[in-house]
Amino acid sequence: MKIGVWLVGARGSVATTVVAGAAALRAGLAAPVGCVTAGTDFARAGLPPLDALVFGGHDISSTPLPKRAEELTRAGVIPSPLADLVRHELETADAEIRPGITDAVPREGQTQAALAQALIDDITDFRDRLGLARVVVIHVASTEPPVAPAPAHRNLETLTEALETPGAAVLPPSSLYAYAALSAGCAYIDFTPSTGAWLPALDELANARAVPYAGRDAKTGETLVKTALAPMFAARALAVRSWSGTNLLGGGDGATLADPAAGESKKISKERALPAILGHAVEGQTHIDHVAHLGDWKTAWDHITFEGFLGVRMSMQFTWQGCDSALAAPLVLDLARLIARAHERGRAGAVEELGFFFKDPLATDEHRVQVQYDLLRAWAGNLA
Image 1 (tube, rainbow, N blue to C red):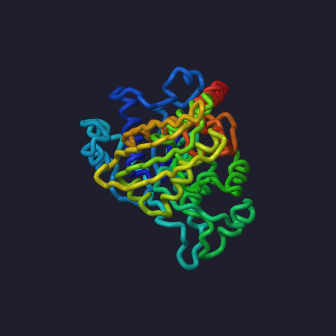
Image 2 (cartoon, rainbow, N blue to C red; image 1 turned 120 degrees about the horizontal axis):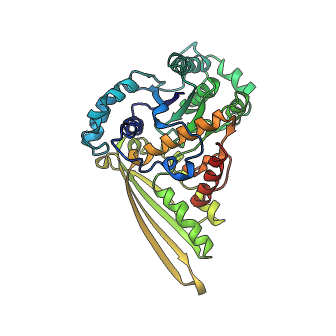
Image 3 (cartoon, one colour; image 1 turned 120 degrees about the vertical axis):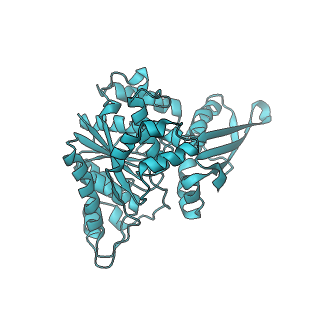
């Protein structure tokens, strides 16, 4: 039984690392370090094996995956000579990549419904032509600015009508991809903080089509540390007064987030955890700066002030440095396996148990990483 993994942003750094990494794991060329589902807690969940995954996707880039893998090798993201050893698998996946949408604004006389139908046709052709049992669509493309609520977002009937209006841009690109995925009967993952499936009308669509979805914004660095540390302060009754962070990013993600509008989506997502865990707002902001020379690496520096017994003032600092694609790629594989199994088991709508993987988890206010993991482990145990 083969499972399709349709990556939106299929020629980006994360997607390339996903395809190369999956091929390396299948061939025994690498260990599953960073793959949560490779642990014993998930051995009996009935998850599809890695060799069952077949890759394809949408992208606006024309750079082939083997070439992209060579670039990532020179950058130190993919170890040498791995890109050469898995070149066939990269070429096979690249042959299944179709042109994406540059934006969601239809040309004169066109509709977003027509744009969505073209995406749906690509996904269903992939599934039918390769005889796949099901397809998981995972959005790993660039972050979009926040989207203002609109009447068409409130329910499926109104959205369907609005999508048929010539020239109307009712949905942003990420949500148009989500609409296409759900309409095609595919599970959907919001790996970025873009709007994606996070609209009432799309939740209604997911339930109507009996497919699951999850998101948003995978936590791979600073926020992961926050959601581990903040519960410690809360449990020990230490009063956190401020928490400020500075994030330095290179590569395409850093360039995208240098745009204040797109950066706002990321900041909103990153700042949800602390108030939820501590029970109150704290002073401080999250800053995101683009440093092109860092390439695919990111650095986060956080400064925390807190009070102890008798109001004594204290502080803590930490620095996190990591390779974004290497941190993200195993989580993409985890999510593909988990939500494919959930779909097989008949789950529909938002899967809050997958909140462990996200900064801004859908359908839940739980942000404490250990609690999230316990919920995930218990849920996965019932998938068998």
